[in-house]
Length: 153
Image (cartoon, rainbow, N blue to C red; front, side, top):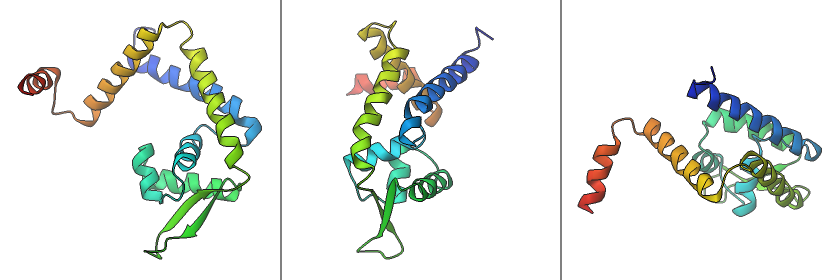
């Protein structure tokens, strides 16, 4: 299994999620809720579909996450002025101060994960992950055709 990339990525994700959840436990937040909190902290008053697009999760997953967050007092929904069928989602006043601390905890976990990597290694890791994501999202393209596109520009 140590040579199986899929297994390694899955194991890394499990370790990362475990560490993030442990760091966020005192705040009553899980790692799955953190992206929502960060998006709302940067730009409050978003709709569920806007959050889905930014965080790249499916509607049912977001609906469940938001329901739990609302139950726990992390967010509140207000009717949209233009479309009464939609709601705008905001951080509660009690949650707002915690977001910066949660982002610091997230950054500490990432720093621990990458502590044996140079800044160049970290940049390369980001680039490789971005390429892997792109390859799975856009299976019809490959590096050769991408290279030709870049040459044409």
